[in-house]
Image 1 (spheres, helix red, strand yellow):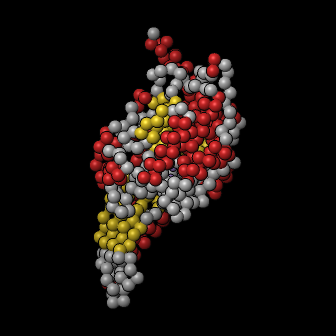
Image 2: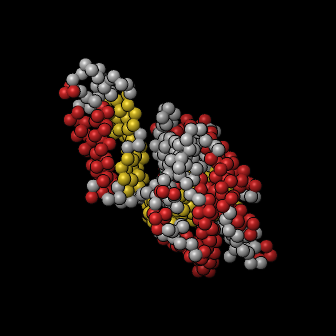
Length: 436
Ligand code: GLV
Ligand code: MN
Ligand code: MN
């Protein structure tokens, strides 16, 4: 049961687009400069975004803490002491030159949800925790969902030393620079008993909702992602003096590798596989020297775990053959590997019920991108709700969702949270009677 003042019936208002616009605008100001938003994982700018979120939440009467991984958690107490929490949240970091909605929409949705409950004078039976995860984007360190993975206890301590950014700074060094302790981060995951369910609102980053005219999308499957780094070493020498038949050109080999990945993921046996080389660096990167060393990334995503791993093995096999033929040496390292996840039906049904209650058109769909929800779902039943992305664009400055569309998502999320609060309370009552 939700309780209002003097137990009078309480009426929840609607999320306000202008609140959402204002918060998203303030967060977008926290950027390194250049096109779009650049607020990288475990950077001082990301910390400033967390501090702003913490301020909003404490202004709304929540207690705010930061966990060892740098995730910020704001709690609104529940009416019944000792209950596990309902969690809501997403992330505040961005990719290089990204948009202002990826992750941000879900955090801001949590703030607006608390504002709606506070304005209605409504207290849930369970505590409500709004979470801003740290370091979700893999753009800086290669691995996605760092904060939520640490919360789930899924990251070994040595990984924090091994992951490095473009300038060679390790994730553990970056953590120390912003006052976090990597030893504690790897050792102190969240306590599963402390959480009942978790919900994340996120922009779709695809066109399914836009094309179907649905306003929200409860997610049934989240793609897995395998990320590799390749180092190809050839023989640098003079571009004029070296005949074409006597070369070991690392960039030419890398170019073949890019097309091997694209061709394989585009063939009929790999429907649904997505393979991308998104980062590539050439040494010495000179107009008059044959490229001697090329480093590049490969990201293979799929909603089918077997197909994901088979695609990776096949691409690496074909690239090895290319390198042998071209007399280029090859080193391949695994950066990260996550499996696809099926989201639990009973939590998703609360989102569907929320959409139906408000008569909001919905469509159940899969996610091509990775999400914190994927990691949290390994120890707390979790649901993910998409709102539309204009033209399906994301990870670019043009990423856009109307503020009113985010507000509609918040309204559905709010009904789902209230519905779960009631149904879990009812089932806890039944369980405790059965125990008697
Ligand atoms: C997160 O944005 C991802 O790369 O899927
Ligand atoms: Mn995201
Ligand atoms: Mn992203």
